[in-house]
Image 1 (cartoon, rainbow, N blue to C red):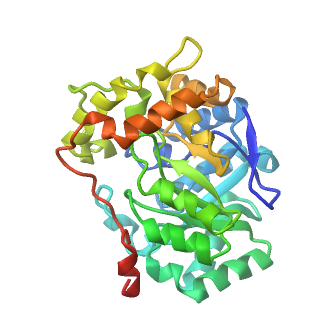
Image 2: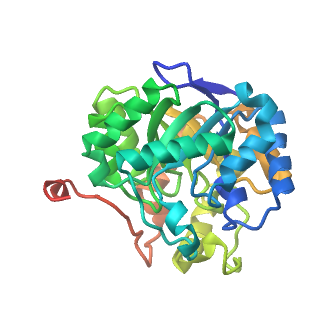
Length: 345
């Protein structure tokens, strides 16, 4: 494993992290508590130090799992978690992946942070992220003043945002980078889904900010692992079943054009992570990890041969041409995608 340190901080994370979403929500298969803990401890043994949770994942379960798995290794891991959804009052109203009400009031942010600390059984959160914020929170000074107060109290070491739940949120990300002192931005970004992620990451360069990025869905919901076919079926409660049929059909065709990235000592899934890690602004990647074989594959990615300049150029060429495929169903973006909308967000 290799490690990266967020700029102008002492926050060092493994280049491959462990997203708790997979093992605590039931949207990528069901895991018993012990199965989840065993997988997390195996990840730790393989050098993974970053564990990314959210208070709403399993209504607190993801944070409780971290406490149970690493109570005696607290100082050897980095805990990232997210707050913003009012699962205390609305957690039982969740239907599939539909969002529940959010609450980013100063009182709610303090209350959620203190509750997360209790579930995590720790005295500080290494990286606190505002979970799926809207433009309203980007522009609300009270939100950011509250985060600074939490940091001054020592409850939070660093803070940032997580964008979602779907692809998009272009100006929520860009404006946060430009206008707020966020250490980290978590967003969806991968070889097959580069817009608007590339714009958000490039905004750090354009504005001269030190912000770095956590990349989730780095394999486009497993597509870039290279195992799907046009006949692949997902269970009704699996989040991938909510993807449009065209995502599967076109994705399989696109992946076939990326097979040149495979080598005897590098899988396509590893190459997808290495493509992201070529950008020094990416602090870590958060692949969906669901079994030990796949975990070992992803954890070994940083030690695999890097992508060459020619390989990077070929990926860029394919992407620019959309792999020669006319998508039957254009991707749907969420949030503020046009700058004109900023006049009336």
